Structure formats: structure tokens, C-alpha cells
Length: 307
Image (cartoon, rainbow, N blue to C red; front, top):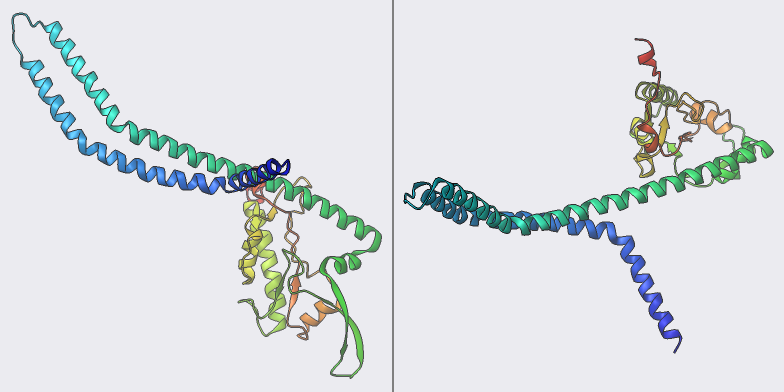
């Protein structure tokens, strides 16, 4: 029997957790329905206002025109003030349901926004810590094994045997074993709207877009990863809406947009440039989530310093 209360507690705890997880959506729905209900109640109250105003006008007319030896001007002013007070009470009673529902709705919407804001802040902090730890791990791998091994570990490369069609000789080459090796890296290939059959054009295009991305970074102080995806004709991603590059000028970021192509001298890059390979992997050196950094003023932007 002792298991029964424990089972009940588990069910209650689970339902409470589910309710807490869904609370922003629930509060948003309550707020929207409440605002609609508040508007309906306000409209109904407005329809009844005409009766209150007609009654008030009649009482005021009587108070202002009444003449009697025992009815002094002091009594007239007192009655007029009383009429206004009673009218105010009636108007408050008419509109109080709409006001109360409206206040509750605004509170629900505000609470929903606050919950989502705090959760986003927590997720940003968690991602920042994870990204920092991953970068430190990569730095240790590069220091001990070199950049080639780091690239193999990161992208899951595999060695395959191919035959050179010109010499019919076999050779071992490394290839990435996944279509999407990382959450940010993308292949520039036929699926891109900006890809061309001319390999020289692709190389020039990528170089020009990287230069343009850096010009944009130095002009406005930040660039989102989705902005770069758009430049290259690559579909956007959810992560690309919050990560990117930000100009710091204090050494905390690279202050440079790098596609990870032009410094690479591997056989795969040479094959792409020479037209033997129809795709090239672009590995973007994003600074991580930049929403919490965009609002910080960047002192000494290039166009400001030249004024």
C-alpha cells in the first residue's frame, strides 16, 4: 500500500511538470481569449451607456432648472455633484467586468512573455557554456593531434579508394561521411540557386560573397548566419536565425567571416576548383549566439572613424 501514495505523487509531479512546460502557450491562449472577451464586454457596456447618460442628463436638467424658496444654490451644487458621482459609479459598474478581464488578460500575456524570455536566456547561457567547452576541446585536439585530425574527428571523414579515370590508378582519398557534418557547415553544390557549372565562377562567387559578408560585418557590426545562407542561395536554418558574427574589436571574436575554404589546400578543394568535384564544404566560423551581443555599442566602426 505504501506504493500507492508514491505512484500518485509521481503522476501529480509529472502533470505539474507538463503544465509548467506548457504554461507559456496556455497563458498566451488565456490572454488572447481574455482580450477578445474584454472587448465584447466593453461593447455591451457601451450599448447600456446611452440609458445612463439619458438618465444623467434628465437629472442634471431638473437640478439646474428647479426653482424653490427652500432650494438654495448650495443645495443645487450639492445635487449636481451627487448626480455626477452616481453616474461615475454606474459607469464603473458597467465597464468594471471589461476592465478586470482586460487586466487579467494583459497579466497572462505578460507572464507568458516573461517565461519565454527567461527560458531563452537560460538556453542562451547553456549554449554559450556548451560552445565554449566545445571550442576548448577542439583547441586541445588541434594542439595535440593537428588540424587534419581535428577535421577528421569533427566531420567523421572516411578513407575510400577511387580510380583515376585518366591513369586508371587507384588512390586513397578522404571524404566526409555525412551530408551535413555539423549544424552550421553546408555544402555548396547544385542544390544552391547560385551554383554554376563553371568551376571558376563558383570560386569567384564564394570569394566575393565572403568579402561582402565581411564588409557587412564591419558596416553594421553583426551578421547572422542566415544572412550568409541567403547570399549563397542555401536554405535557412533555425540555428542561423540566432548565431552569426559580431564585431567586438577587443579580441573576444574573430571580427572576420570565414567560409573555411580559401585557406584549405586539400585535394578536395583543388578538385572543386579544377571542376573535378561538384560540391565544396563550407565551414563557417560563427561566433555563436549573438543576440545578447548585438545591442552592445561597437565603438569605432570603420565608417564612424573616417568622419
